Length: 116
Image 1: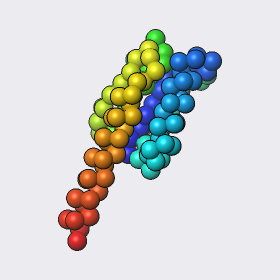
Image 2: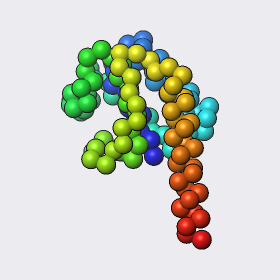
Image 3: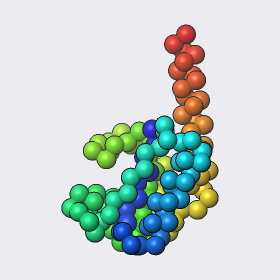
Image 4: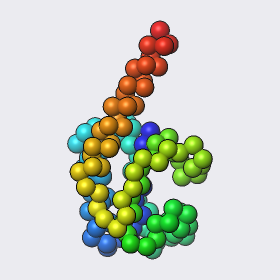
């Protein structure tokens, strides 16, 4: 499972564009089963502010991160994949997500062959 997290603020044009772009890619390429998208408004609540501080994502928003096999409650087993700071992710976001999808599918196929 991939976790795509954006730290930003409601009303920030680049932050809103980032949210829309990620959602569009997830929907267009049928990534709903392997990608979870989260947006944290660092001006809205203490949890978002604390997480943003932990990931050093409070300045120069939006800040977007991709991790594999991670929950925000436990970052110890997380595999960092990519990040964008103070910008809307480019086409490389789509390329990264599709490559990770292919890797996940290949891992699943290997596991299924071993189980047979």
